[in-house]
Every structure is written in structure tokens, then in C-alpha cells.
Image 1 (tube, rainbow, N blue to C red):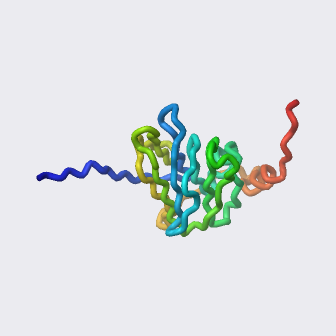
Image 2: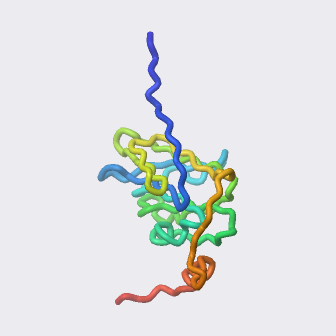
Image 3: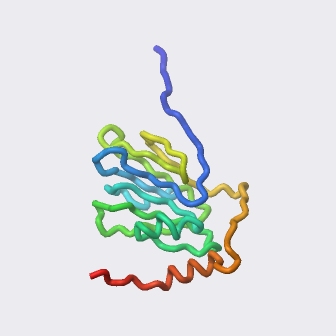
Length: 162
């Protein structure tokens, strides 16, 4: 008997965030762990974001995730349109964490994983961790520092649109 392994592993780098998104009309069904600790047993949602401090003021902020200080050494796990549990707000974890996201129903509820702009479709298990061997220069306007922008976003009050 011949056994064929159809599991394909792909690696990618994300500076801002990793987005786990539903691929069909069905909401995703996810299990999220951090190391050996279970973060959430079953999340039914459009998806989940794992954001770095650099990415926390973009897509993560728009899904009501926390703004992380650039020097925080943290990652943010934020649900995208959670259905069950509806009130789950996500979790902030340390930079040494290994975050594992499992698709609980690959046939009926396929998901894709997007690391910044690289997409992997029909993902089953996504593992996310910080790579401390990679360094890059962050460019910004001297007159409007990123730290200043984060402080403004954190203190901004939401306006009532009615």
C-alpha cells in the first residue's frame, strides 16, 4: 500500500498581521491555542487577526482590536465579526508565544491565511510566531512619528454619527 502525504507546508513573513478569513458564505470555525494553553475552544466568526504592534493601528483597529505600543513585545489576537461567542474581544499575548489556529471544519468551512499580502487557501493549521532573526527599518515622517500617531488613536473618542 502506498501512502501519499498531501499536506503542503508554506511559510511567509508578515510585518503587520496575519488574517485568517472564511473562504465561503459559511463562517469559519476555529480553535486557537497559545503554546499549550487554549485561548478559545471554538470561535465561529468571519475570521481572526493576529497583529504585530506595527499592524495594530490598521486592520486590527478596524475590527476593534487593541492598539499595541511599538515597544510592547506583544501580539494581538482579534476576532473578525464573531458569531459565537459573540462577546469575545480577543487576547493580547507575549512575543514569545506560538499561536496555533486550527480549522475545525475544513470541508464545510474552508479558510484562507493571509500574511500581509501572501494568501494560502484551504488552510488547515496556521502556526504564528515572531522571528527575531529578521530586522527591518521602519520609515516615518519626522514631523508625525508613529508613537505620536498611536497616542492620538488611543485617546481619540468615537463620535456619534446620529
